[in-house]
Image 1 (tube, rainbow, N blue to C red):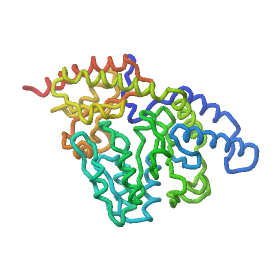
Image 2: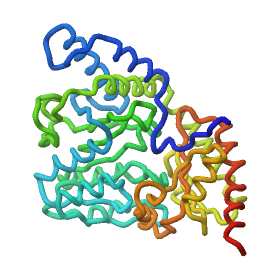
Image 3: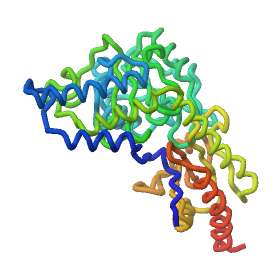
Image 4: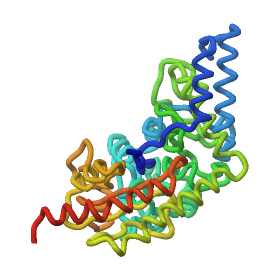
Length: 373
């Protein structure tokens, strides 16, 4: 049975171009990019070429790109680096747990609420800024319900007040156009594996001229901004994914296709018993939709879909490692315990969506029947 993988918001399979680039890198003579022998300098060229590819894709300068082990480290580095400027951070309630928990460890946090679609009000963000605010966070698009945030407005307001702002773009990168320098944000975090790059690599973009203390110390790698030997094969793979997305209108075409496929899912919702849409169905990331499935535990829905050949996820954390309800859905004022997140990616086809739409009504009906009258 062919599987329908619809969990690209969690991780997306590596693109063929990424695998090819990484295999070539792993097959080449090893070299520390910090050394001045031939092997080292050859490796340095590979790292810097990948850095330039990532910078071009995200509308940044290569020197603004700090390569990390992923989006989570990039977020932690932003929080830690900014925290020496003050002991207070502003965090919208729907931010990823990596942002919420890192900020909480750094000091006092003001949590800003959202509306029923999961969108923050820029005026409320600004109102939460105080004299000791070191950093304001705003995600570009929500990782559970897909709602787009007013990023440009929040960034502009923070710049007017001289407060640093960090944008979590892990879900938005590759789905919406990002021009870091034009945006004016101070910090922006991304992850390679969300866009068909390799796991274990990401980047923190740091505005030119901004100096932050490093999170990881012990070496002068990344211009003394992140110690440790670079993950060269991963970095090369990240560069390859960025290069694909920066070629012509590739990213725009992928985003349009993602929107078409997820629109098919949304169009089927009225026919599904007890199912509603969470988040903004229009002003959203193109690859992700979140459905509320009333009266049924998310684990049962996911297991039923898995048996039917569909890989999806629950917007609620209780479907995986944690038993806690979704903080995002709680902040929105909806059922935080029962949801289904469907997300597409570069490899998704109509057949994948067909498999989901064929299986989901049967799974829901079967589970409701088990629940009795």
